[in-house]
Length: 159
Image (cartoon, rainbow, N blue to C red; front, side, top):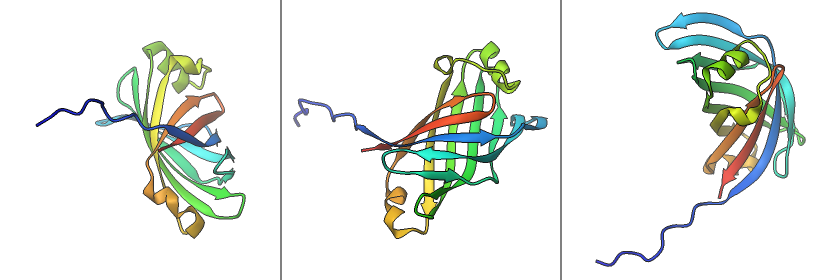
């Protein structure tokens, strides 16, 4: 058996959209067996990019579990309404890590330089729009930055 001379090429990424997600004050549940639970209401936002454009409808939320002083599980669910009027359900799961000091600042709603935080996610999409059905058959990744009054997410298709 021969060994291939080259490894597979890493897949390129295609930027599909940047989301500016407006959020409300956190609803603190408290310390649970799964970590410190909080729910962040999603109140709206803008979606702009080379492939996907529209608004984020109010009514979604980010369900967080702060597992340690440096690690947070993130699970957001919300709906995008495209410029054409199609609706896309988004389920975005990820992690956010950083120093204990920076994570504490984020939890208090204070500004932290995004370069100091590792914020990655994998969004999944559902839609009834036939022209957006390709969203069901692709893998996407996201990068994020948390600001006091909004979250900025960049979504990429793994090509």
